[in-house]
Length: 188
Image (spheres, rainbow, N blue to C red):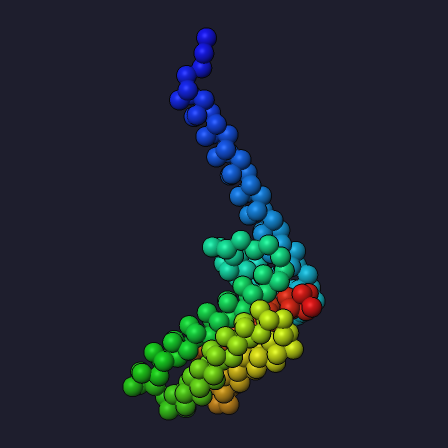
């Protein structure tokens, strides 16, 4: 008894599709394993990096991208920092439009807006430098972005009882910068 042609095509299609899924899933597992091992290592070595924050952030960064090695992970982490400083800059722009802001808070936000506005092209340049393997330049650029986040946050502390509306964003920018620097130290 002969097997109908369409049945053979169907079986071959299932075979190739299942192999495709296995290959894709193994790449996903490799990416997840790379992220886990990288975050474990850098969070042990740098007290400024939380393992969970690192894991969550890098998983988000690799959501739509396959990450094949630590160097690529470094590039994706710079992209995360870029999104953070850009988003924070837009957020501050919205906050300063509030006419009811305390003058001190408004002044702090204006300072932060300038710091984050300067950070955007700095991170862009850091990404270009990273791609060109100019790691010393990346180190300086990312360090300056981390300093900007700290300076922004410190401005609110100059007056007792004033809470920073950017506390979490500043902390995230600093920690993302620390992740970039730590991953870069693994790449060097």
